[in-house]
Image (tube, rainbow, N blue to C red; front, side):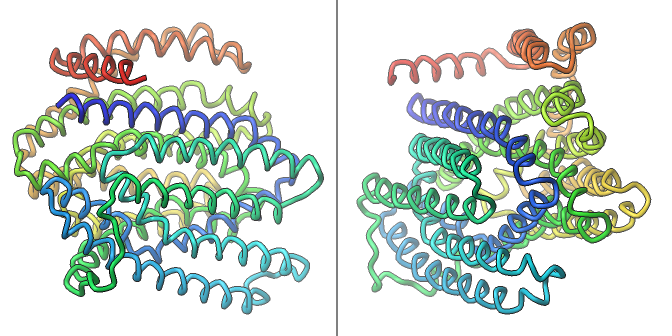
Length: 504
């Protein structure tokens, strides 16, 4: 359908643009922030940010549940269900926000028992109060973001995120230049998030007039349905934190806050890599939900393999670039003293690739509510990562922590996940793995020329890095277009691209 392909391509394009802007901001801003605050205080800021990230567990996976059920209701053209989901979700999120505030107050009270340095307690309390209150407000806005995404209005969410990123970066530079420190960063985060949420609310109500809160439409059965889906999403969120966020606590406990800063260089780059693919491929989530609700089983199969080809193509090239150009990039970006982050970067990228190649299969499982075992698998993977990191950090430092993530991810995603996916879907295991391996091999062939270009011209300066990146991307795109994508793929992409141009 042209309208669907237009929404998918325009949404993915805008998300890539927005994400590219975030990366560019981080590229210019991170060295400035680190050198302005110093390794220790930047490590302190990363630690607080990771700590606040755990507030996300209070979501209980309800944001995804709301997105999934509204998308399904849209596919089934069921306005009554939309109203019930919205009127049920809002009071729940209000309660969650109150819980977030209560937890924040408790943390402020017990902060002397959390920190060992008495001089850092007032700062810790102030930042936690600001960011905790920020999270409480943010919970209410999640319904509106999920509603916009369920309608595939990705452009609105992208524009808001782009504007917020630019404003936040500008304010951070102004604040640090004026001599302000971490407290100012917290206030900037609060006000930019608040403004963004107000815009989400406005457009969600405008785009979906049936989104009207009615306390009479609150339904215990709807709440039960949302929680039955979200419970396992919450388990997956815990697993993601164990996989990607607990590392900084392990490093801070066994090494130092300065080591957290060094490791965060690698982990931040990999997180951007992970978010990039998630940002692009998440446009397929509501489509899977709508196709499932409409019982379009053949279309689901076509969508999944098409999305997998796109996911493998993008993730393979970005992963190659991070491994091939990571060392000179870190040297030029941060300095030679941060090169110990590069080995961590390599093993983290290799581990994450095993997941990113299969992002569409994960999207399908979550979009069709078949994620219960996957949630359990993820939590086992997260615990394995924590245990391995606790052991390996003693022998290999920050590299050992990265190894823990690599081993747990690889076993889970390459061995266990494909078996489960074949079991809960209409895809045969042999068929799925054969196609996935074929796509990876074709992308490997397409990377031969970029590898040669890198071998001859790479150097630790931005001019060479940009030139090598552009040339590599050009040749990789040409080879991938010919050997990876089918004629039908190329026709869909060209049609969607022309549709986007006509809309501009």
